[in-house]
Length: 168
Length: 168
Image (cartoon, rainbow over all chains, first blue to last red; front, side, top):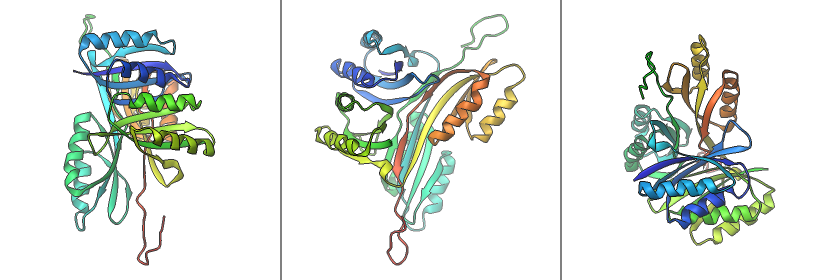
């Protein structure tokens, strides 16, 4: 099963090495990882996507929280969440097919960020499935290079109706 | 100095741990890291932003390339490149100020991805400086939570003019 974990960690050298070492020692392969700044300069947030059964994942979460540099770990995918991934992709532009590619970029709400006579670089964000679909439609033109951020996610705000019942 | 490195690595458990361990042992603090899939299922691409002087960075690059799981390391920031970062941010919506926030979202070309009566979640991508400016304009409303992917980057395509001279 695919899980999205979000860990709030201290912004110190070695933290990533601790976390990565712990996950590797348990045999968890990290499918994607994004580490970025947070609202507090002393803390970073790591979002990682891992595969594994739920019970082992819970153990890993607890083990991670034992690391002194890890403040808190959240199993985001166990809740109602919004996920996004960002990609830069460089694609070949075969003669006379630029407008065809532009049309696909528009459909997927991407953005052209660099153009040369034979190539185009496109920025696109969205759910994993959308990004993957975009890669597939571009593949026949020839993908030169691509880079993805890995997924980030935040839990949705809870909605209470007037009687105070949780709407989800 | 701030450097953007891009490493093509084998998609295997433990690779991240090797790379992170190596950087930590050299005292390099990783400012941001993004690990995502590439055009080849057996390879991942790591983009990391580190600070340090250029000569030591070059040593680190060479050391990284000695790891068997690392295919290639590129110093992207030494070239002409496009960089992007993605953020999800949850902000408080004080009574009567929703349209004010919406206006800022539009100016920064962000996108509202979740709304509740008292909060709003916004997606925004761009250069680091743009993301940071957006955080600053939202700060007075009260930032509930935020998560960033860390930077990804690709080198721009080179432009040759008709005489074959490199235009850069």
